Length: 203
Ligand code: MN
Image 1 (tube, protein in one colour):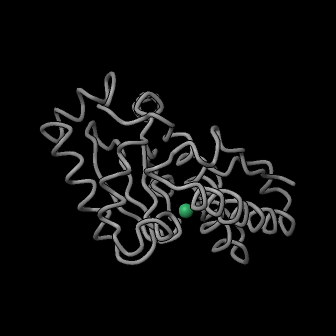
Image 2 (image 1 turned 90 degrees about the horizontal axis):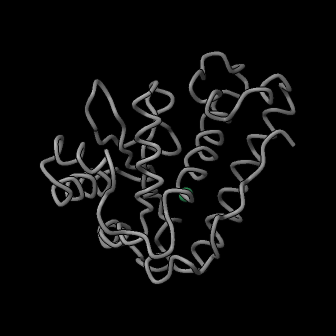
């Protein structure tokens, strides 16, 4: 198989009570695995695609053969988004942003509290399935939302962090209360990892 689902870097129950064990099991073992399976199906038809990283594939969708382009967009995006998602969370996470990112958040949003509010507001308004992302564009942090499994990589931007607002990410525990999920999610953010990604985004 060209691509593989990375194992979760912690136990399924490790993010309790913010994200419940059942949600993590389904989300990682069923949803993420399905994206990877479907992406591998596209690579079977066009083996040359397997020589690229999933990030490279979704960064240049125009070069992906048309018959599998939508499959790569949706499932390559799903693979990349979820691989990031597991890494930017951790048990006993949360607290305040660290390092250079903390200073940049203060500069661009006027503080962490204001940033959180803007991020939650953007993500709660994403109609249907999608993601809220933080990107670095023109020397500034910016919050963007994307439908489905679309990725900032497809706009030439590196996602520093993102939260999944597909119902599969929160419905078992939070039901239709997406705003409640979004405000609780900060408790599991791995700011050191997000800060590393910020350093990468600035390169
Ligand atoms: Mn998801």
